[in-house]
Length: 272
Image (cartoon, rainbow, N blue to C red; front, top):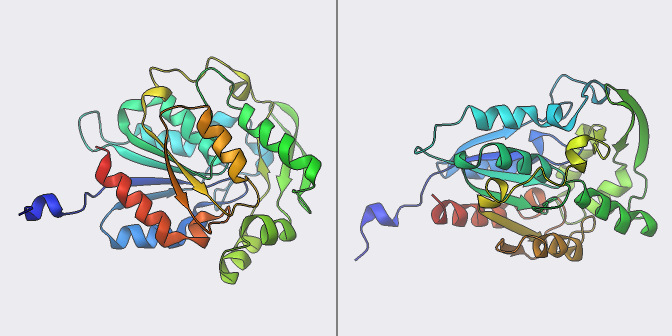
């Protein structure tokens, strides 16, 4: 008979990272469920996102944008103690990759939730470029607006997610209240496509980024980053575990929060 100690679910410290234009608020359903199950939970606002006080034109680099995550991982328990499970959604996957390269010893697993997942040997920006290549000609960005900004790197472009795009390509399977929340709280987001970090083919290494266990959660009803696009990224990183969530739109945490929590609990029990 299995002992009571071995049958207990393992408790983990999850760090949740939002996607472009979003904030920690988008994880509210998942955060509540994970906390109720006894896990530790940190949901972050990246720079100029959510309630972070900076404006998008005040954030001069992708490193600065990702600083809240990098600082949180750096401050985590030292090697040999409990390691983190990082969960990144959409564009947040690129911030995850940066943290994985810097602090691989502190991360038990990285979960890419319908997220940009770069690979060793190619620049991180390849994922964003491929997404834009696939979506722009098809008009999938709908009423999203490109807004000129000026920061320390010079002229740049931020994106404003339009209400029709959110309704039909991002939250189309999600509850109406989650769509309403997103329409009120999204902020302009910078993809940092011209940032040196995005163009450095040698940034991600096998010894660091490649050593962290990766799990990709495929959103099967994603109208933004299609299933084909998601599997293209998985194919570029052999050895990545794959979990599928049927009926999940791009906002997996809103459309299928219970199913996503089940996946995260499975990962908590699998990786030390």
